[in-house]
Length: 89
View 1 (spheres, helix red, strand yellow):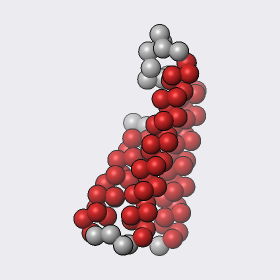
View 2 (cartoon, rainbow, N blue to C red):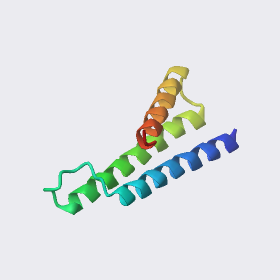
View 3 (cartoon, one colour):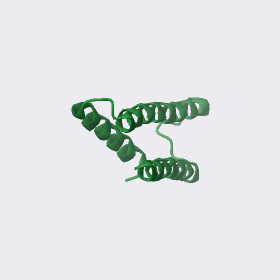
């Protein structure tokens, strides 16, 4: 069980690193060009921080096994949502 979790965390980290390197390569940010560059960087950093925070909380719910089946289903859904957000389409 622990190997599956470790592999999943490595997959998430690799997806985030790939997405970051791709953004740097393409130099495409979601902020209009009239915005200062530090705002785009701050927005991107907050996207990473919020994603990691939610992912950590949901993985705790899944791994601990102390929560109901319904809450674990929600946690799995949230993890899937975050993975789907970070994997480029």
